[in-house]
Image 1: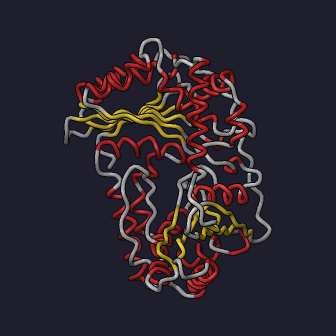
Image 2 (image 1 turned 30 degrees about the horizontal axis):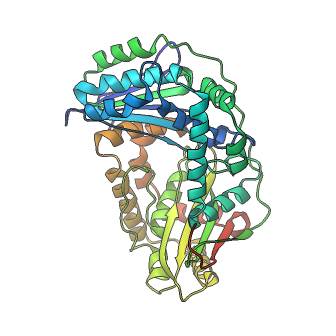
Image 3 (image 1 turned 180 degrees about the horizontal axis):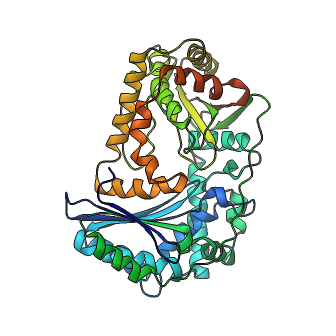
Length: 428
């Protein structure tokens, strides 16, 4: 995976990763900023996501009215995403057209319009997005659990932000956030595809090299104190379906325990997909599927591992069968976790879980866009070596390590259990 990879840092601090892939005449370019909801404080929640929206309002050189048409006319696709630890923008285009994407992102790094009228208009859009999320049971449940799990750390709030903050922030707040974080010394540019490294490096230096670095004043993340016992909560909302979500503490992605917990997730609930831009695989061989879905206690079950800078949550979500009660499913979950505490899993079962986790990882790493994605994504919480050694670290996981991390992380005293109670009403 490391073949043809070049990694440099420009004098202004911009980290550049280039990887030649000559399998198709395509190039995918991603610019990553080390800012997400983790970097927000009360009163400013949701600001990273809102600033992402404002980046599509254009610059003097690239007005909003021509941006999308320009990319589409050249046969490209583009998008952007904001998450806990990062914000990213990408363009995947025919190889001879990628210069448009490179010029666009260099320009947006310093010249984005923050017109007051556009800010007002986008406030309505973001609030509408927030209100739409509130019609989704799993959003309501996840937000309540995340808020209960993180009392101190800024992982407390959802990426979309809290409604009072979305109603009160103004243009100056957004612009200041943009100026603080959209700087070359806080960014990673990852480009993969059909190009020659030397010429691509020269073009990037020409476009980005003159952008000055700026001193940053990030808000320091506060360490979450140990939880003093299990937290249980319930949330009421629209629909006919009940859900249960159990959220356990999980290690940061750079921690060695992340890998045995990844295999445990594959064994217990089916492998989680760390690449949110690719599909998944069946979890019908997982322990919880057999114990819950096949026995008609639940109609679905899935796990959720996240690769994050700081310790986050490993969640197990159960969609309850209409004829059963949430507590029944939770009791079965507890029984399955107790088995992991008490018994060493067979080597064959671990091998199958590793194989599934490796397969899912491979499916989400194969095309040019995904290759460029991983180059920058891994740098957000670790470095590219994390991606390069991922498969071999999974292969090294032993049955004894599975038992150890189950006993350490899957414990009731530090989990949050949430139940979504449907009110039988349609979403508004």
